[in-house]
Image (cartoon, rainbow, N blue to C red; front, side, top):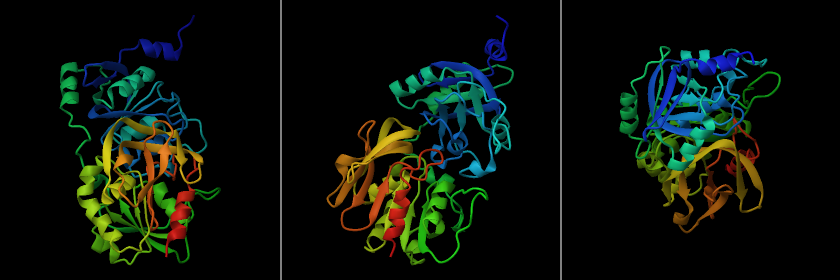
Length: 387
């Protein structure tokens, strides 16, 4: 049988490698930027949205293994960036990215990664790698791309073992905005892209722990007049805006570490008694901590766009997008706070609410990007609660 491009490539000398802290090594083909990074390795099961995943600030400190093999085949476009630059440190894929085939594409994925200093590794047995992540928990890894194919394995192994990991690490300060700003862009709509919100809306302060753009768009589309403020904003600074509601965004790192400054701020808002609060992902965990609950590190977390979540109140099952390595311990919820959503994969907590006021949060991502839009109603529920 004549050799194909892919079979010839598989025989070529490896130009990238992934070294796990336990000594396991995966070799592959490097693309994007050259160099070495250390990170916590997770896997994502989404079939679309690789660009949104790479630019999600919640992936700060992590490298992403994509279980779906066709990554990069639709190229990249500026419209799909969730932030200005990728926060995931590297990507690992089964098949090397092909030339893009999509009318929206502006650039090849490999070129996009190279310009932004991010490493890609293709030609990897991602099923085996995913099993390793599942069995041992999200491992610490060193990922190297060298076009010459020369690697110091012992040094890479030591780097992987020296990586401190995400527990106890506050990353929200590293990904948050430097100063407050207004947001008026709404969700994408054919044929003009992202329309601007106009008219008077309810004033919402969005605390940026690593906010995705599409979350802010969803708030604007729900009729909110959005002001984004940094993660370290105090309750006094928030209340000075006389907001109708407060939103707590997604973000990376250990919620207990971020909670050192976020929890006092949220408790200050709660003390007012009449301001609705809505949190997503890290914002969900911050609210839970502020109410007296606890968070725990998960074995390998939830990362994907096909996670079934049940809402207790209605019995409805939603297919959701998720990205988190920590979870709220539902057994630690205090009196007056009830669980509203639960994962049907493992029973972990996915939502809470206060029983006597419009304060609620969810672990999953109702803004999608990427993923299903089953849970968008949560933005409308929040908007309807605003005074």
